[in-house]
Amino acid sequence: MNNKKIVGIVGGVGPYAGIDLTRKIFEQTEAKRDQEHLPIALLSIPQEIEDRTLFLLGQTSINPAYAILKIIEKLEEMGASVVGIPCNTAHTPQIFDVIVENLKKADSSIKLVHMINEVARFIQENHPQIRNVGVLSTTGTYKTKVYPIILGQKGMNVILPNDVLQDIIHTAIYDPIYGIKAQSNPVTQIAKRKLIEGINYLQKEGAEAIVLGCTEITIAITDNKIGKTIIIDPTLILARALIREVNLNKLKPYDK
Image 1: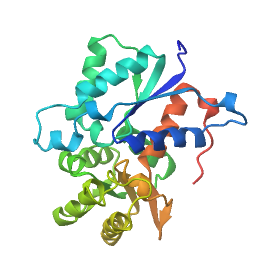
Image 2 (image 1 turned 60 degrees about the vertical axis):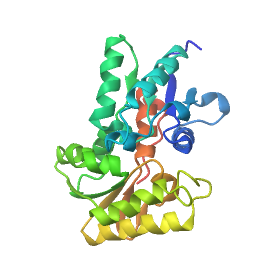
Image 3 (image 1 turned 120 degrees about the vertical axis):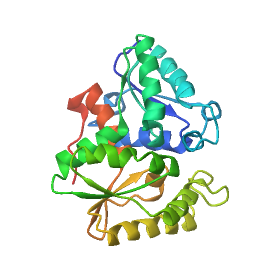
Image 4 (image 1 turned 30 degrees about the horizontal axis):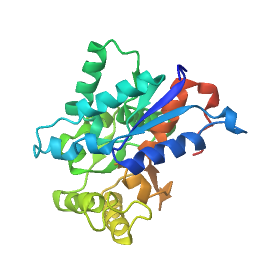
């Protein structure tokens, strides 16, 4: 598999997020038959990757960057030239920068796409009128303020849930009974209700667009708009960025 145009996907963060990214790559690719689709290598080894939020909250000292790095190295051995990680929390500097640093030390030729940078680029290019952006995410992403920092650099004002509501959003993702990580297909109604509660709050606070800043949330909420609010799907954006990096001619036009 020495094809330098293979797209690599780090699976297992969470497992359904990797499947969702793969599906969206297929959906966003110009192809009329099997052979016209891009080759994709998805490697999902969830038991080896520590939970990203636990690490960021100081509840484990094991940085998941190193396990993710090993998977990227295996994907490169399989011929991948471009890699995406379908996990927003893994793009916080405490994790992502360690991966990048070690790839450089290993003299890797992998192009690692930064999901949150791509979200900022996407909003700026496709919705330049938007200034107030709400974000729903895990508590790990929330605490690091990675979205406010990156979107703020593009002139956007980021609106986040308050701490009480953030706990509600986090449990919609992580609860062992009804959370999306426990039940992804189908997602439970209680998890969806909690997420909608968060969306309603951000709308009332003036969000013109809302980023679903956790790849589990994009499994539960699939709307392009809710009311007048644009819903931003980082997994879809990552899928389009990966196609762009491999073969721009294969990328479908963005349907606003």
